[in-house]
Image (cartoon, rainbow, N blue to C red; front, side, top):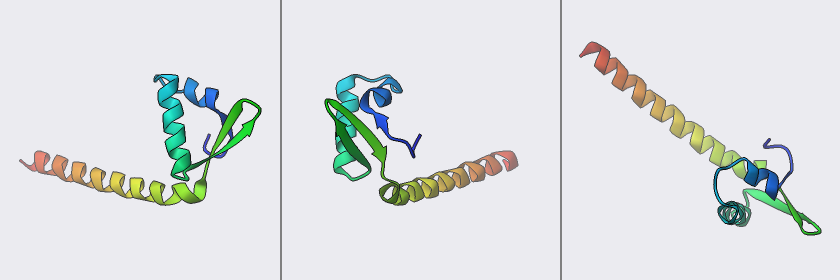
Length: 81
């Protein structure tokens, strides 16, 4: 999904939120440079910007690994205790 262009409607259909909320979030992501937008008549198509998302993916991965380490340590303390 990340490497494909998607219409705004297709993106919105994947989430259980209002269309205005999806539209607002797409605008914020576009303004942040995380996605690009292409217009074709009245339709808008969006694509993830991998170069911009790379640092974000790295930060999320590091956060996830850190959190998993903390959970693992807590489980070990519980097992010992």
